[in-house]
Length: 414
Image 1 (tube, rainbow, N blue to C red):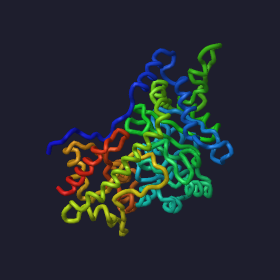
Image 2: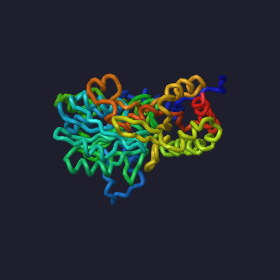
Image 3: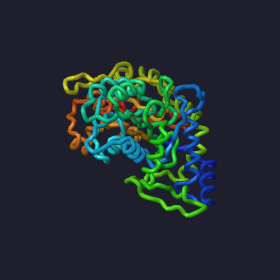
Image 4: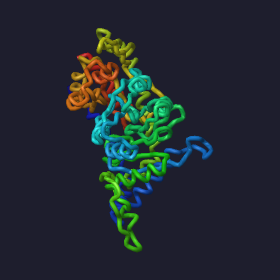
């Protein structure tokens, strides 16, 4: 069919302000780990503490460590937290592979626990049941920008003397039960990848309340050397030393210069994405009566079910909202047998769509490495077989949202 203009899966909002900030760096000495990185780290720390008085229990200073990706941020944080070969870290199967890759690169073993089918978030009860003699940490993921239940995970971590590391790649803006990323975790890691809510094309950051942990992570992101170039710049020459084995994982001044102008508008853009989410949700019941065979009615008025490992996994057509989401993604869950046709059909009709995510233990390498049989994590598998992510970004217009839903209806009817 013909289309009236393609609707992209994502469009960034970078413009003149970011370009001017970037050009200013070109006129300075430092292009990589320098004063722009330090300024961004300070400003992100302040953003995470916004609106909190110094008397609040969660108002301790936030130490931010800029990295060149969320993946390397996870790697740095895990090493700083003491992960050793053979250690086990409990995490979720509903995530990007970076989460488990970072664990395995350090010789650790990911232990996957199932998710809450209503939210797709790691289930605290499943985590509690998965704790074993080799468990050293818990790594929840704030999926689609909705925070996992950090109060529950903090209690489990404290009871078993485990570290608690948050994968907050899907947003710096989220909050739940009065808790933000980095409040209860020993550290939280963010992503500034191209499609994220704040972006530099690639990049990341770690936040922690522990100043000594932050110092070690700054060293680990820069090969493990004792002094960065900025520490040695000007004055008497200072020798540096290699004090531990680290990584090349630092954020650059060029990236930081692009990121800094985005922080002041991050909350307004979160509200724009929430407006998209609100409108998408409102459109679903309006479209329902027009579909034949009750397919869409079945899809959006009751849970999709699948039998896996002898258990029935009920998946709602939309994730339930919890707390304040960054609204990084908007996903719908379609019948598994129609999912590939929906993906192909939406693309052919000029709408960008994606899958976030297939349950990662079903991917070839992890299937071979972790050997978790299909059916063992029924909720994650049911979601992973059905999920479709629709366009979601601040510049999405009302007419585009309506068109996306109309074309989703059309592909489901085909």
